[in-house]
Image 1 (cartoon, rainbow, N blue to C red):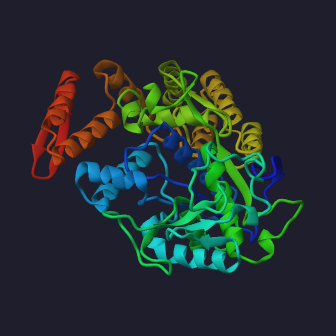
Image 2 (cartoon, one colour):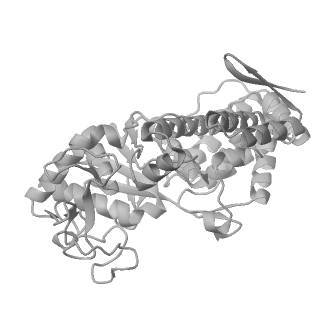
Length: 469
């Protein structure tokens, strides 16, 4: 039986879907104004792993991961580049898809954009107002009245009395209470705006996930996920909004926990050399920057060999270690070509233990340990059946599916030339963006960097191709 750690209840619980074998899962995705960073990589890979495992267990999963394509940072970046918001977001959505594909992340079933669900957000805000949990302020903004939702703080463990204005909550003189948060923002000059019952404006950030999850998964669904940084205030506000818009059993008190979602899952933070990743500290890395140095499967393996809820410490030493470990697994398959094996939980002791640890809140660290036990046995016995088990079990994690010689050769090329194939492709995409923005100095810098690594670029009518010189 699968058990999950539920952030809402702070306990590990047996997973019981609302309507088995159907499972509905919503994960907070990216705000697309820049390239995805390591924190985004962890969210994408972790919930890709969870989606794969739910399907392996026979559940019919409907997986939604949203895209935030309107907010203050997006507006500011588009203005800075003197391009439309759609041009900016379309570009970075494509870049996100490229990064996800490089990391072996399968597409979600639905990838809703916030701007496509404005009508649903307005309808939900109207319901919240009608239920007495929101109000229209004098400036035309609409605010959620936090003190009208007594269960507020249950997810993050914060009480209303402990939350003080001026720390995490923006002070606004138009609010009735400093803790109240915005559902709808009145239009400002030169900003995108939509018609609403309260005048032209645009939605607040939090309402989009409540509205899109309801539109695609219904009022009550099984799993909601995201990074630990979203517990407060984003996910706390989502619960308040979704329950504030509904009067049904899913939001009635049950052992004092109130939510429209049964299981809340959060992955841990990324740290860099034991410090919080931050642009201000100069230790902020995009996925593309990391892929300039490391094979994408190495990065995926690095993320998955730690438990999803634990902090993950990024450093070159840790990535080098992950690279060496993945090389050992591929070497076992190279030396003993595997036969095709359809793995299942009771096939042998290795598969039994693999399924057991994965069913214990997705214990990938222990699952990787089983893979190394199998690899050691394969190296001793050269048993093609066990090699097939190794490849089959790793495949459930999205690993070891390339031809071993190709991975090992790529690893050698990376050592010899300093750049993997994925890193070269990522640099070419960055160069194309620089050229589109007429940033010729940056375009030339990237070309020179590639040339120094022995990479020859050939620009043609159909785009840019490359070869190793």
